[in-house]
Image (tube, rainbow, N blue to C red; front, side):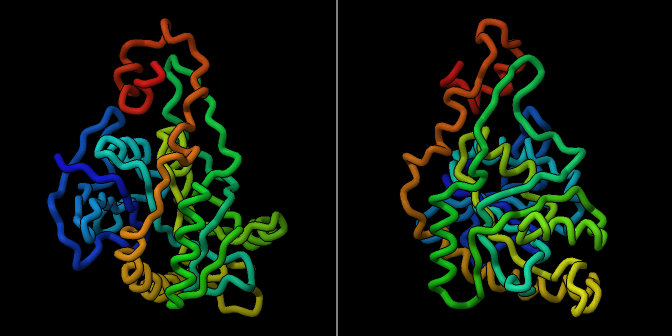
Length: 287
């Protein structure tokens, strides 16, 4: 099975990356079930990249149903220590226009029905999450996209992650705006939390498709409008990805890579053998 240090999790509309040298497709079995789809191992100008479509090819998995634990575990098992996540979002600010890109730096979690952690079942761990996205990777993505001048890009924004699959009410949308949130989507949770627990650098390219439903002067959000903007976004992000993955700075000493160092509270001698076996890939060095 091939190895890759860089992972890409494709969001809505990003089910593959055309024109890349595909080395193999692998379906990784994990203790947490199967990932969303086969993982495509590509060679990008000498860099090994593992690509995984979050919703499966053909978009068949709801945000709540995405097997995020299996996805993150599978990527980690292939050697991935850095993930670029791609996500379609709605805008909660006038300045973030449809078809703009955002590299968020904060998250508010409003999900209700998702498995958020690798810990549990006899092992307790608490990983810090004050800065939920990798700072070094986020800064690199923002500056790189800004230099390309093919799309307006924003940073220092908060991503409100809702449960879905239904969109917000106007009251909810206005509430989230009052909190200072910049964008709203359904997919960075639990991905970002699990990536941090797995000591993987994780950042998101959020692509705005609409103004949610708060904007009184804009026409009501329709699926047709979202799909049209999403198609334009997908074309842009695919054109950027090759350059983005081939110029990533060295993040070996990033704090994300040691995020679980002091996280495990449970006495090692009483952690169930089954749980240790499941989590050896992530925490063997701490066991």
